[in-house]
Image 1 (cartoon, rainbow, N blue to C red):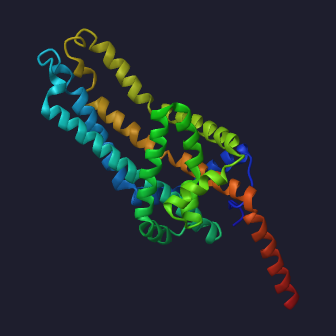
Image 2 (tube, rainbow, N blue to C red; image 1 turned 135 degrees about the horizontal axis):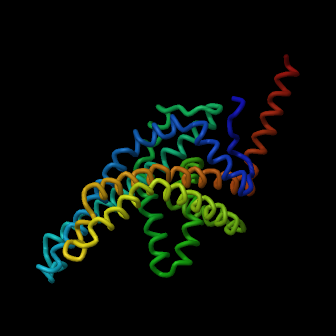
Image 3 (cartoon, rainbow, N blue to C red; image 1 turned 30 degrees about the vertical axis):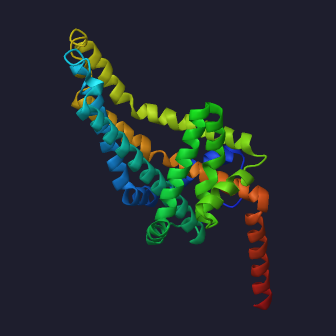
Length: 297
């Protein structure tokens, strides 16, 4: 395929960013189709859990004056805990399945000469389902703990663990081995990896902010129209339309996170090539095999 992307090679920051968007441009149809098919149910549950949380929290604001002990209310507390639990579980499932879908799509793309075999990807994600769930939960806990201790350790661990899914899928390692190896793989390359992810996150959030413009416009108009009643009824600011727009913006945000996931895949191949020259060796072997075949013919 003339316009196919070679993953197994070294790339600088600009090349990683460019090839990330190029891959989306070339493979958006099968890639997003697989994401919605495999991770879609978890995504819907995640958005529903978020909307449930919004309704629980903001829908109870109007009761502050009549019930100053609202936070001690059993039903309210149960609803908040339930919505947060659903968000966490669905988030773990969605990110695990999304990373697994993207990484296996890349693997299929490489093995099939620039094409993604959907059946192949679905079968492989099913096979790695529990490993992906475990990886999503464990990396989330590690990074979360890093941020709780201090922001800097959280950022450091987030950059290091960015390659764990690539290691898990492409090298078929266990969860613990993938996490352990990610520290070795990134050694001496942390700052450039951090810079690459930082630039991509900035671009990602710019795109997300554009997707949230309808929500901001509606909130601003609503704030002007209900300014007089806001103090007496805070819930008037968070009606069904606002929550729906917020849910749509959240849906777009989670789907477009594929940009970050793809970036981590290119980062993995870049670091792996610098350490082991895997792509270079394969290229040399292919040239040798082709020359041998020509001589025989």
